[in-house]
Length: 498
Image (cartoon, rainbow, N blue to C red; front, top):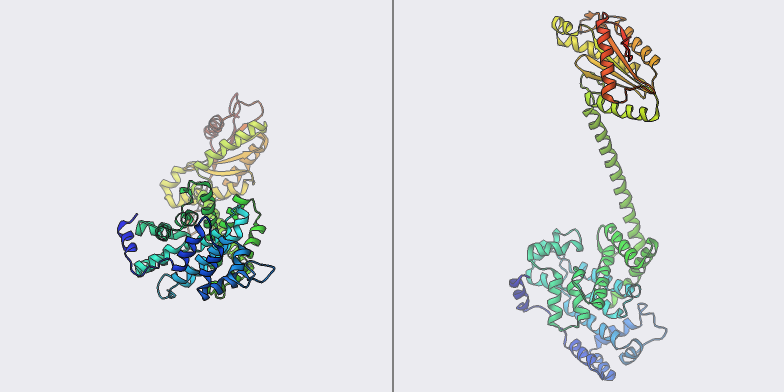
């Protein structure tokens, strides 16, 4: 708690006090033998207050079947508690109302709009929440944010600047704590204590942004109701209603097991009832839209946000695919690199062993490649490697992977491929490599090129069940091809390299 700020609040000469008529009604109402006639006389002594109460009692907000013409009649029809709540509400709103603060960051008109929406929501929600004191819920919510008015009065532009930083009302407490070491709810509690309001009003005012701190079950229910009513109000006053609608739907589903459609109807009812009650408190709601229009805008925003999210997700997925491809692709040839070779070979061989289907590995080594580099230079060597890589790509089927194993060595991994097919594929590659000279520069210079190839195959019953053994077998076959004079294909067998 910010003690210096508390002292400034307590000593501020312009802070409102509880109106005398409200104090008198409270005293009389709290008496064990409350005199209804005396209370009626006290209220009637203020013609403006009496008129507001009678207008309210006869409004559609209460939907009374008969006209109420006197305060005494109102006390009988509505009960002492309801009339007392109206007296307090009208008196406090009148006393706390001030000039519109639109020139600063704190907009009093917006504040009162939110307050009356919230108070109406509390009265409507009290039935759902099982709160018997609907009138107290209305008043507690109407006064829930009075701390904002006090902070605006005491701090002026400093508080206005703070308010401008908040995207919505729900963001205010964290900002206030960070900058003031107390929240508007804390200040509201100070005021209710100053006015000696009962706990049923003071606790919700002081704790509606920290409901978890309330330990009394009855007060907790009322405080949670006030908090939820505030979020309902945000639906009607926030520029972007979507977060508030989602929050209210989630809380109503959690607390009352309400479907979205039922919650939306509840919000529509709150909007309609608020339009009836706001003029009685002389609060101008302005050109606020009907809930169905608010919901339509929120849904449109949600659709737009969803589309943006989908586009961002698609873009991110595409970027991830490109990054993954780049990480497993040889930059010179566009074939899979050694990382891709190792991963694909292990993955496919595991599957083929499990399914008992054949799989072949072909290793290719360019003949006398060192001599090409030494005699004609590395650009010529790169041109040869890229040419052979294109041939491997052309031969590879959709399920196959062609890789640059390292240097001038390349490989074909052929899932579900028999020994005969693998040998024929390797021979086709060999013939294609040596079929015509390779152009190695822009001037049309060509080189005769050949390759040696080794083939190893996992077959049902074969011991070549791991990537390591299959690779070693293919390498042995390649070694035999080189020893046999190069420019040929050899297939590994358990007895000898054919």
